[in-house]
Image (cartoon, rainbow, N blue to C red; front, side, top):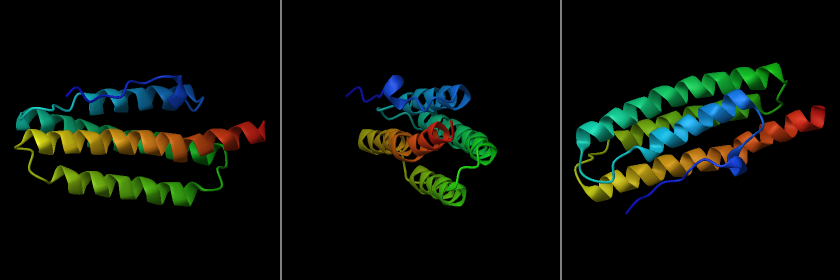
Length: 129
């Protein structure tokens, strides 16, 4: 299986800094191995965890800057995503199925978050213009 989701303009929210960060999140998630390579998988998890936190901080700063009315809700969603990522990352990654399941989880939450939550930020900014 070659599970991956490549960045394309469908995922753009029109904020260059955040779009670039989203692209890096895709790259990190795509690098999660689908074979049994627990060391590499754990390295990817740490990178994803750290970068997601960094990205969420930047995204929250942008939401504050533009007066996004759902900021508190969005922050709670970020916190829940980090918690879910932590929970999933604690599972053993000693089978191909476990690695594939983690990779699917990571890619799904990135896509879902961008397409539902972050696109709403873009709509808010567009309405302000």
